[in-house]
Length: 397
Image 1 (cartoon, one colour):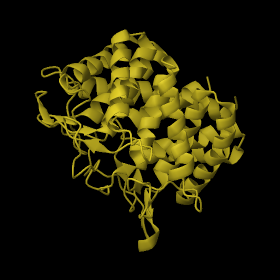
Image 2 (image 1 turned 90 degrees about the vertical axis):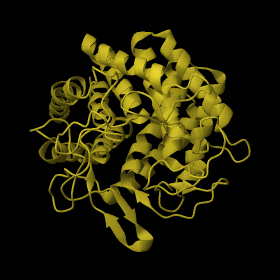
Image 3 (image 1 turned 180 degrees about the horizontal axis):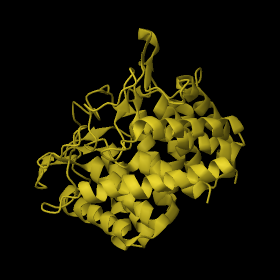
Image 4 (image 1 turned 135 degrees about the vertical axis):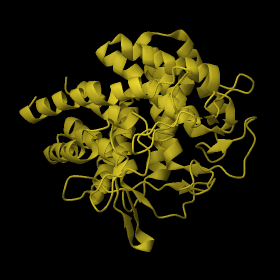
């Protein structure tokens, strides 16, 4: 391993164990009501009465389970167990299955819709906990949630998965993941975050039905989601996979490049892997259109409006490190290593909040830290940045 990678590995390990994980263990655990607090502002003000989101809890579960598997520290297992127990006792719907989208601060259901994206992250967290600890209950619930997705969300006619259903798995008029999304039946984002947990579950439960579903998801990315002309991912689709939007998400491009590759590697299908490899490179190279001279990756581009969102979001920079390291590790691309190192330099110098801990939500186009958006919250979790650190450590031991 070259000197640059040795330094990178040492620095990200320190960032993980000295900053990211302690922040979530010590400042976000709700020791009175259970689980984790739902929000801390960008100024570092804790909001103990904020609602608690399924995404936040499931991502904390994944992060600390993975950290325990990698580093073996009992405090990481304890934090993962806190997340697992709260997920199963409060977010899981014992009557209809699936997980609720949102709880109030006391753990009572606030929004009971079944957003498939959230079920995907629950599978991701539970499967990682089972992988790290051998816990059978976590595996059983992960399998149960996989069956819920396949039973209720799978489109038997056009393939793929619908976005959301109500508590009793009935169609809903508004299936958006967030206010910024288009209200379409299928999205790239949800399919990416079903691909990701299915691959993780397959590592410990190589079931035939799961294998078929995972291969189908890989095919959907290759055949439906990756734009044939540009190499970017299309984002929003009608039920029959027609796409009427032209939005580029550079962060999702680079993230999908390595998650798609990971899924093919986990499946171990040589023919499928050979088909995936050129797509991995093409998607990552398309993402590079958003690289800035300072090594950061821009957020989004709207070609029809001739407009670019030039914020440097925390998760986009973390995924840029992993995606480019994947190109270096598996495809021998030396220029990709330099891009990963440049992204890490930007993170170190600009995104890490050395005063209050964790990372800023983003760096604004004027170069200042974004303090108006959450330090921790419904979407701001330790998953992207924690995973980046652990990916570096696992890929280059």
